[in-house]
Length: 95
Image (cartoon, rainbow, N blue to C red; front, side):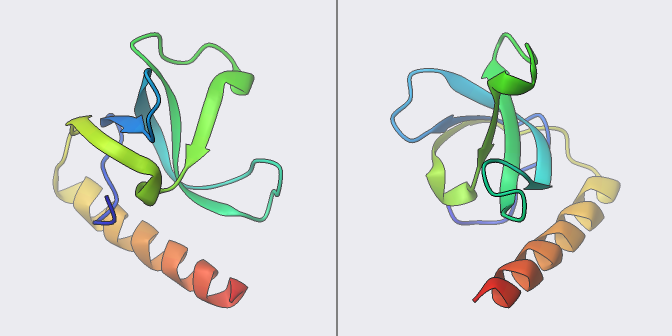
């Protein structure tokens, strides 16, 4: 799944996990290397946010299945284009 960023609220499967994940953030920094940029932050579905230790950082190529797309409107589409550019620019700088 290497297409455009998915909207917040989308429900996906990461790799061959058995538990679904709901996207709650895009274009995120963090994890063990705080300078790394990730496509998404997610929480387990349907439970949602439990605590900060139960959030997942992942990239679009790790998504193996999309179950549901989150809400999309004009504002979200403009935001996704900006986020895509930021991610691309940061990853180019890292090379």
